[in-house]
Image (cartoon, rainbow, N blue to C red; front, side):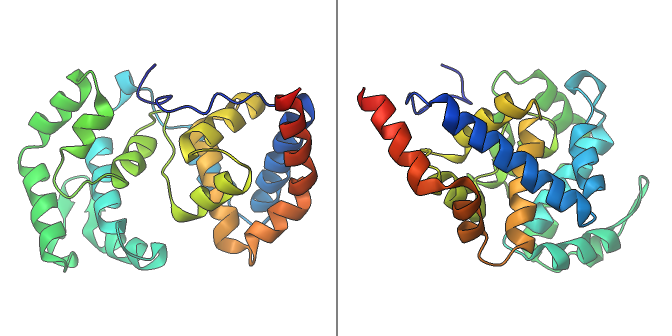
Length: 224
């Protein structure tokens, strides 16, 4: 059992439920593409392999996750754009939160050290959690943005996974990834973006998936 599948819910899932989850995901993906979010999907699809990552990419995603933590996405984007002038010039004054500012400076000043240790670490999720100002939730956010096969257990994804009777976000996104052949990071993004642009998104998903009937059918399948 690896760090991704630890605690995996070993329930059987009947074929009807699988097909409905797949169709639901593809419909939601198409909806957010039509609303102008294709570039976000392409970004996650095109994250370099670990062997092709460079320290600037690593630092940029670390900075983004730290700035974004505990903050609305739109506000974080403004701060990040003000900070990230180009690869050789960073505006540390743009980061008003003292602990975040201190953490980012620390990683910047020892970037070679942190990047090398990330590449060499056997448990990359644990290593990411050891970085300044990275915690239990943000370690998944950073891992996802560095191309690792993890989803961030954002409150929206937790609610969607629970609605569909999955124990956790990792299990849910892994199953959808296997059904759709999309990366876990893309699956995470699709559901997260849908939740952020859709009022009553849980009710929409419940209606589209026919959740009550599918859960009933799956439970009968498991009992049988």
